[in-house]
Image (cartoon, rainbow, N blue to C red):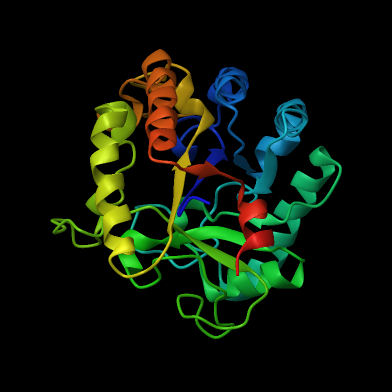
Length: 294
């Protein structure tokens, strides 16, 4: 049995990371992504916002029919957890608002899917104790929200405390840390350069694998298995524009956000899968990991 487990989590939301109201990338990128995953024999988890599921239930059904897990990703990509850094105009929900919003997101995804999702990911990986507790109440078993680049404590999946989600406890929800290269000296006040998204498409899969190898060596030195949980987005597999005009304004994404989206991104994901397989990696879903994790 391999000591490298990989979870690809595809956050299914509006184009360019929720900064637009458009779903072109979801509609056109998802089928291309599903074809590649089928060719490679890889299963993944697609985390849908409630709005994406309501607007495009046919995509939810395509994902499920292809054998992948459908999870939830908030209702409108709002900040349901604790912000790590400030984004102008983005305000978090109040703690007392969290349970209702998590429930509404769950109901929206369940309506499109035909059953309740059991895996969750917070937008921007901004989780919280309130979110984890709300998930447990609703019967979730996995939450892939822990940003290893920032908290840097939990190197492998764990059951969090109901008092502090970043600490170990006895919650029934398995918290799955998202990949970060813990061997590099961060130059960012929040450690975001350890995160490495989206290096696999802005540079190459081989560039990302250098950091993957660093991380695998880092956890092996500590006698731990390597669980690599990545976040990506279906819109990355369809060409994204450099500007978006709607309503009364314009959104101009940072160049790295949209760089090489489309064919190159799809090609490099295929290369990344092959390189991970060469290292003996096994692929699973968030639900699959939670069901077997000891």
